[in-house]
Image (cartoon, rainbow, N blue to C red; front, side, top):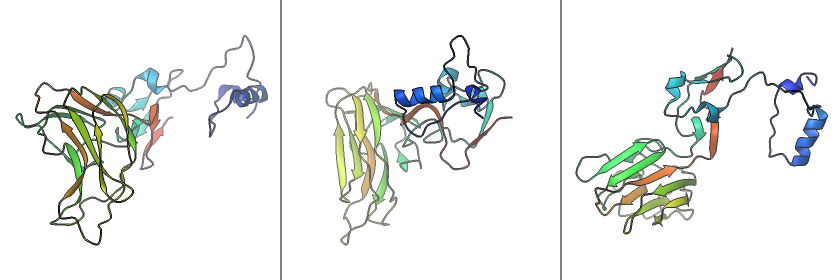
Length: 243
């Protein structure tokens, strides 16, 4: 293998220091001025510009930029942690949260994609995207953990804000209020444990966007990926094949 290592690649299980990289170069005799080390295969998600939205234009393939050995992708969800980039949560009905507020032309005007919400108008008294963790009539609706994740907020104007409600480590529904544009880290939401004396009101978690009923709002909540410019597989039947 050492005789053809110059045509392959290296994968490390950590970030290598400069000294460690130089050790690899020296061990495999890679530092040869005047010679071009050509890869046999080369895939580059960023260069290809493939996304979770336009993947069909590439026939669900990663392009080999040095030959014709394209990778055919199978069973990719093209959202969340199965697709391009890796997103810890997914917007939409019956995804990370159960319900979404639908546009109706009067009280609500909202656009959705798996990793972005754009709110133009929203009644202040209701949730935008949410799950019940407890309902007084039926008990628990959803009891699951939601990881911490980062969002980027744009379009907030004076008087407008975003409420993020979650279950804290102490098993209490807790609120984080976002009143400024920019990046924000949202805390982990824990699985709700019904106490000995159950709540007297329904408990929901998720987002509520307060637009002050301004029909010209463009408040955007975008989930930021934990991994960029990469193909992510969630371990549930995802695979790629190249011949």
